[in-house]
Length: 437
Image 1 (cartoon, rainbow, N blue to C red):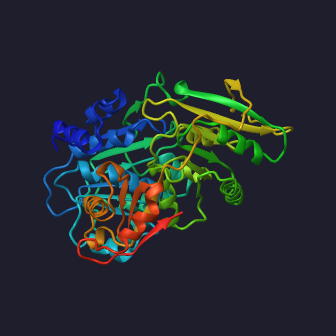
Image 2: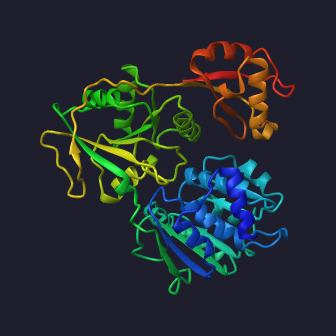
Image 3: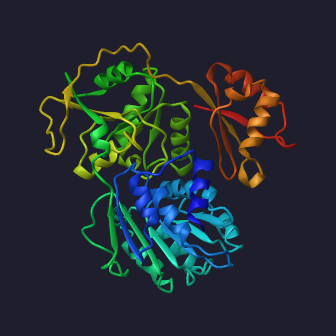
């Protein structure tokens, strides 16, 4: 694809007007092998997408490019960037927790670009659902995380199914201590994002001392002290996430929950409700520290100290993204060990009061029909405007899944909208509409 056409597609589809220096450098590098080292939130997905698309030729019924990523959430995030930009090319996403039958159906017409987790991609290769021998461009995103999660063997076997890709792109949030021995990267060009405008330089780190060993009351006071906006509270264990989430909800705070013990649909909904403003507070384990498409986050709270410097970096990387500023709060209690990599700029004692407190601005409607039922965002928006008496600017973010759709509507109108929606038809079909809480 032509570089100018790709950038114009990005501008129209994402609203990004100008590339960062790192994105421009990656977009222009046409070396056979490229390693990109850039922190979370630096925009490296856009960067490697441009580079990859520049290397594609006209569709010829064969797979041209493969992007491997270590989590289903990251696969979906990359897919949402690539698909609208890759005009004229078929792009599919393959990942665990998704219907294998639907993936096989999507592969019945050979895609040009495949974005997948290593395990699911290898499964399709072994079942002969897909032929990777024609792949010329391979991207491995967040290679460091893929190694950490134990995907080395699956990645090696997937690459072995390719006939030696001529274009390689490897990305990592940290400098690589080891490179994949099955790829010729010894002479790769390395691009390291400049640190002058790193997220840390735009982040204010704040320490809060809890008067009790149980920090929950201090956390509640802090959240009630903050101005309205999105906040992610990080804990170290699933059980802790459940406990903190329950306490926040009991105290009337609009919180969501995210951890690996939840099924894929609940995890995706937690992110969607964070992004659309239904639950602007998210309680999460480190699973939510990277690989997720989350809109601007004003603050990150470490309820538990991050277990490693890398964990801290990725947690903090959820705020101060793409040039924005952010605040990071560390809550400690007496006698708690503070890791040497944790440091802060100032102390703070929360008051428990805010002139503009965090609140839920919208409610989320769930429709039991989606892409596979030929439902689009425009269909849902038009349905709500025509049948629920909503003005166009009252319809919030709409997300379309395979067999469902989510739509944000004003919280104060949610009951009336729900009643009206359940008495009307969407594209001539009777759909069930419920309220997500």
